Structures are given as structure tokens and as C-alpha cells.
Length: 163
Length: 163
Image (cartoon, rainbow over all chains, first blue to last red; front, top):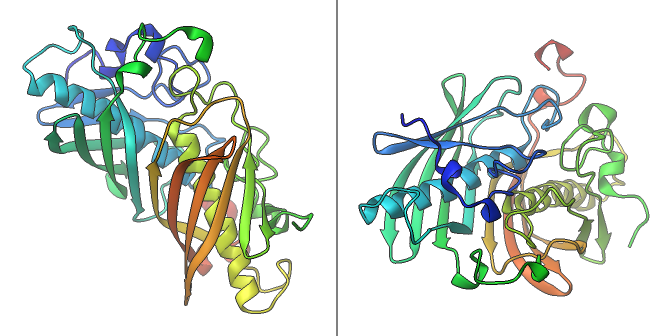
């Protein structure tokens, strides 16, 4: 796996995401990297991210799959163009749709591994399939359709007054 | 709308959910109530629940739809049996699948309204459709398949050692 995570390349203005922003001190700070043709994120839920005693909250699982997938989409888009992730013009993706199937209860207290695979890159749209595992067992499966962020939402294209 | 929320009837052991548990001090404490044949939750994201400046994080939206829908499923199951929510035996639902379509960016700083409708009650399975709106505009649509919590996960049916 490469050392620097996809999210480490995001410009500061786009690094406040609760799920994966490196500048959001209260957030989950999810980091995603290539592992061959797959992408991997390790997520450590906090004790408060509970559903019922002993198990992880489904919203946290959805959040992990979401940020893992938009990060994967960005990395795949750069790779499809044969470009390094930090190069200009910057590419960032937002979620158009998110689907999670909860296969079994996810135990709380162990790191979760999200593994993604790019199913399709089509124009500005990337579809990412993923699994979320705990202690080697798949607990959830995800599919995210991510779309390239519209220009008017990219930093520099607008003032901060709308923020 | 009725005064007491569905989640206020959950037994203490099942009230620690990050999304809707009244005993999770760090959680979102989502509350859901009937409004005729629909159900309504009002959710107030915190400043940290940001995606990009000015907009709500998609994982928070998924979380709101998730807890709104499992609460709606429980209330619908009681209603289908003609029982009051606090009556025994207790019914609680977990998420089997969650689908969210993000229709437009959701502005941060205003309360979000989630409105649900029971699409189907079939045995132990309830399907809930919902919308999430900000300032009167629909920003996301959700569909959740919720299933009645397996007996071995209900409080009293197991020791706390697995927690």
C-alpha cells in the first residue's frame, strides 16, 4: 500500500468533511489507499458509535463506506487519466447514491476494514463496490455512485459567504 | 403530532444508539413521531457535521434516515397489531438495507426534516420510504428495509459480557 492517503491530497478547503477531512478535529479522519487494484480504509469506531451494546452503529458503517467510496472515485479518476493525485486540475467527488446491505451485526471495539473496487468509470461518474469487515468477517456490503463535484462547489469558484 | 417520541419508549438497554439513543450523550438523539400516517423527525446537524463548507455531510444524512426508519418500523409494527408502543412484548428493528439518493447538496445550519411513509409490513420486515428536507426543499430520498431484532440480541436474552 502507498503511504500517503487519498484524503491527504485534498485541498484544505475540502478537508473539513466529518468522515474523512484531515482538518475536522471531531471527525472520523478516514484514510484510503490503493492496495493493488483495490482500495483500503481502516476505521476505528469510538465507544459512542454504538447501535446496541457490543455492536457498531449502522450510520457509522454507512459513513465509512461513503467516504471510502468518494475517495476511491477520485483516485480512480486520476488513475484513468494517468495522473498523480496531487496534480492539477483537482478532482473531487460527491455521493449521488449510497446503498448498504447489513450482512451481520458489526462488533464494536475492533478496527473495521473497508475494501473497495471500482466497478465502472463513466464520464464524471464512478461506481464503487465495497465490503466492510471486522475481524476478517464481512459485516456489510456497499455500493456508491459518486459524481465529480460540480465546478461551482469547488474551492476558488465561489466566495466563502455561502459557507 | 404526538408528544412522546418512538425512541422514548425504547428500553434503557437499547437507548445507547449514536443516532437515536436518549442515553447517548454524544449522539444525535433523533426523535421520531407520528404525523397522521407519516412519521417525522427533526434533526439539527452540528457544525462538525460538514461535508464541504456550507453543506451537510452525507453520512449524517444516511444516519438520520436510518434511525428515522427503524423507529418508524417499530411504530408501524405496534400499530399493525393495534398495540401501544410501550406495551409488551417489546419490538425493536435493525437495518437490513439502507439506500439514499442525494438529490441536492443539503445546507448546514438549518434543521432537517425527515418524513417517512411505511411502504410495506411483511412478517418481521418493514420497508420505509422517506425524504429529507432543508428549508422546504427535498435534499435526499431514502429507502430502508428494517427487520425485527433477533431475539438473541434483545435485552434480557443475553448477558452483558458480549457487550
